[in-house]
Length: 385
Ligand SMILES: *Cc1c(COP(=O)(O)O)cnc(C)c1O
Image 1 (cartoon, rainbow, N blue to C red):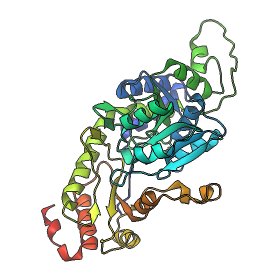
Image 2 (image 1 turned 60 degrees about the horizontal axis):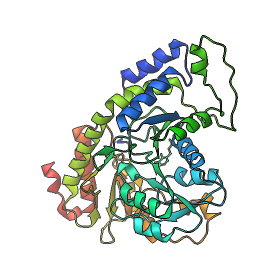
Image 3 (image 1 turned 45 degrees about the horizontal axis):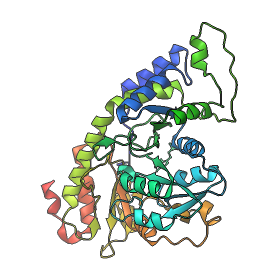
Image 4 (image 1 turned 180 degrees about the horizontal axis):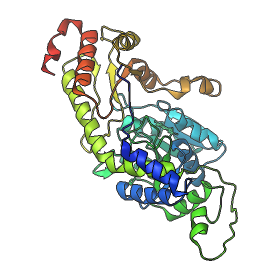
């Protein structure tokens, strides 16, 4: 059975977790601080704040951006549901905009049409690791005086115009869930260049506490903490951070390996006329968090049929990225939403397995099965791979 994804974890990560457990400090402490400094250095951002996951990273980003009840935030419906949920958490309204068919990312023209006097921010997703056009959205935000928040849950290791994701705007949120490119079990990170955001985010993730445990622990003076505002417990543990430090060391290598596999798929499928493959334009660098193929109308096999037949052959796939407005939780509260491009992409796309390390015979088997099922007349063309 070939799974859709696998985290790349080694003895090194296991040893780091083991050592941390026996160090006597297991929740947010020195390892979290080290992971944050390394992550900020990696992305080129001034500051990084580790949190429990990307959903809580997004929630805190909404709060520090001053978004509250009645405000509108424009985001894609085509994203993991946590994107829109983070807007709901602060009482604001997610306004869903369309994505572009060839990269699954927000369409700046469609976003501009949806800006109203209530719009406070754009929540930009770098879907399946492919960067969105950040500059286009920065321009819109400047023009209409909006905040830009990046949902980079899938995009650790991706880059836009020569700079790593995490360094382009005021608030960028990452995930370390096992389905992403590097993992700490669960976990998240916010990068920012703003000192005021950095200070407030540190308070909010730990109950609004004025002095954290690590600082009190190393102080030679008695310190009493105060709780400056109503905060949350959104901490990352030191056990997770120790694993994260080891994962971060491997990130660029993992991304290179993922890109090699993506390139093999692209080469193998490039002559099939009724599918669209991922397109990486000049200036865009994807970490290939997922490999998604779009089946055009002319495709002789139905998407769901193809998924079942691949599963019968021992190959797990996933349907296209979800659309939030078609989930029950959102159908109940936001009616009459019409997003034909997003719906079509969800219905006609299929995500193929991609993980590190992937064996040559696995890649060949997936390619052969996919081509045979989708294009029975051309069996034999896979022999080059
Ligand atoms: C995975 C994901 C999230 C949620 O990340 P968690 O760390 O699981 O909270 C949010 N947004 C997008 C686009 C995602 O893919």
